[in-house]
Length: 149
Image (cartoon, rainbow, N blue to C red; front, top):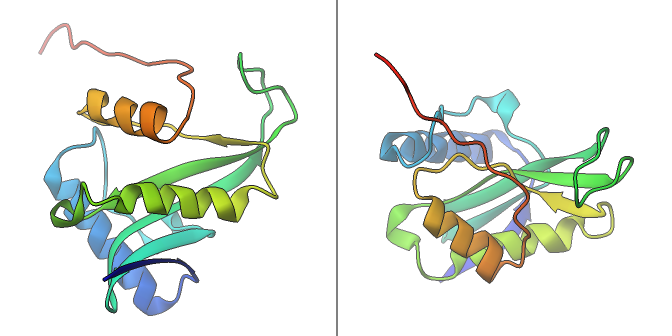
């Protein structure tokens, strides 16, 4: 049975989270993703466990909005979800949704807005998950096209 809980970044947890980021990187589903190092990981952090094994995680950081976005006023207290990942064999079971909701619950007293940058290769799936399932709003997109080798 999978359980979701807030975790502290202990040496054992850090080791498992770094290994998961390596697995994610090797899936090649996210543009420019590199393996995390210990100083990349932040609290608050929530993890999905299958027994003692971490099989998914979410973490991010707090900040204050310094420039205006159409939907986020200057001075707003924000939480940016840096990463949310679930091992491939555990996907489509509601674990990503549970991790997102655990992070929302964790930050709701401290942040006015939850923000999320993404660099996925599967934009349709990400937009479906975050907008249609998790209730986020779409703000902007940064698109690229390589013109020459």
